[in-house]
Amino acid sequence: SDIHIEPDDQVLRLRQRIDGVLHETLLNEVNIASALVLRLKLMAHLDISEKRLPQDGRFNIKVRGQSIDIRMSTLPTQYGESVVMRLLN
Image (tube, rainbow, N blue to C red; front, side):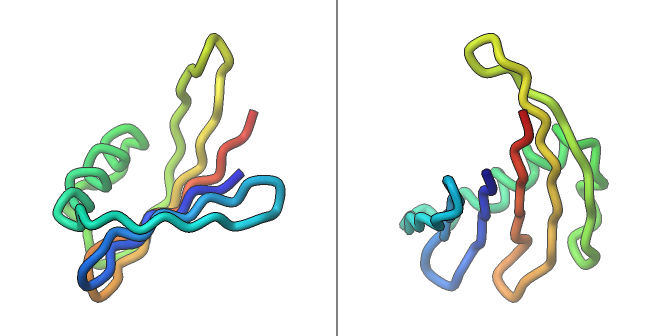
């Protein structure tokens, strides 16, 4: 599965690819985008001061006792950094 986090002018766009189908959710909380990206970059041991260049990293989380590897990429956009995560288990 993939998770896309994309800040836009007025909304925060979240897209999840589940079994090949992309589901989109729009949040009016665009102001949380930078804090969310910052937290994810910390988890993936990326350079939090670098916002103008793409970065790649990975981290691992446990959900209900199952280990999930997450591969993550950031990209600069007009409205802040976007994040794409690939969940591997």
